[in-house]
Image (cartoon, rainbow, N blue to C red; front, side, top):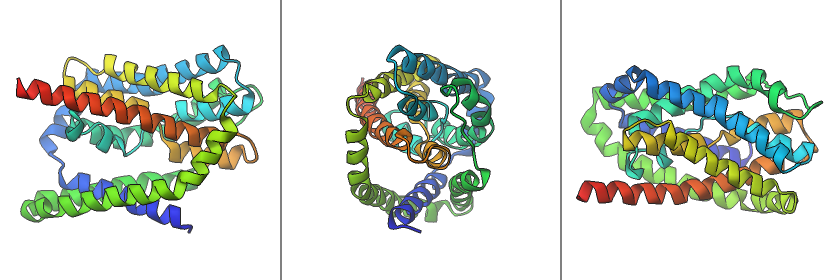
Length: 282
């Protein structure tokens, strides 16, 4: 296993375990019982964003290879980083963020084989290897459940563990970004000039707006769903791109999408955080 993959696993496990330590079962049950909110989240991520992606790649007349990379991200929602980008510290709902981090990737394993033939350019067939994708889901769910058990059985110990695991998550994220920087820079260079980056930027912004609109009346839930809808599952999309579209620009487009969504969500998260702090102060 390569060093970036090892760091990525450390990042994922520390993030989900640290999140599990903070799980409030009452909040999560309240989220599950909010049927309209959950329905809005599913429609935003599995229906509206793929449709927007399909419309945009045709509107900008992208080549099949570039369009494939954009659409792979559009049909692959759900990423654990919604806990960081749309959780309580960003003015969002931690319970809702955790719910999205579990449900969206799990459902993606079912929906991608259905939506891929519908939106990908004609002649482009994506195979979704479950043997590669299921570990991604397990590395999210298992640490989260262990953390939740520790938090429930030993709350004092859990409170002491939150800070070190948060620091480990941030450190792993920084190291991973440094390792991936050359690959991301190379991908940006490959995609630059194809209108792919502009398409990705517009799609991410529209995804934020979609999540915001369907997030309901609660500001915290709107913040969380806006971030959760914009953040697409780069791990899932990258696996499909490298397995089904090796030697094409699809993988490079997926990497540039990762960069674009990270920048947009970071900016939006800063705005949401200031808004939440201002409302709390007033």
